[in-house]
Image (cartoon, rainbow, N blue to C red):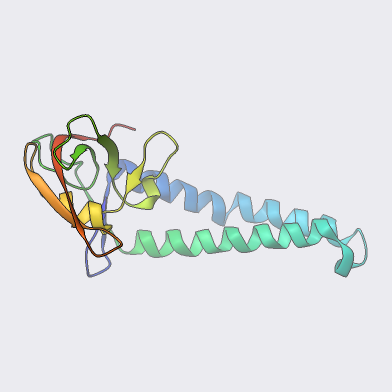
Length: 165
């Protein structure tokens, strides 16, 4: 999964289906559930001092924000194939790098949008400094990226393989 400057998001069919299912749930059953919670909280009385009502309204706001995000993402999505296992770093790949030529100081991460972020593996966006530095490089090549302090760091690509959720 990657984003281009035209705001197009490339998704595998599997990722598209997952996000579409989440949107359908949030737009249908989840909206009904939150509306019922709000209605039940309203019946408890004074809304100014009703913690359940305010919590439900806050949950509703977060849910509606996610619906808008998913709608925009899916409207601009292009469905494609998962990246090839050819050793080139691309969005959708699990990448292992070594910092400054030190083979013992390594980091393994998924190069993908935050839509793929999980507790199982650290995720770096292709637009992040590290992500843009390694994107397109091949195993064995060095990549350079800019640090927040304006200096540059280099890493060596040790491995790049397609992500298998």
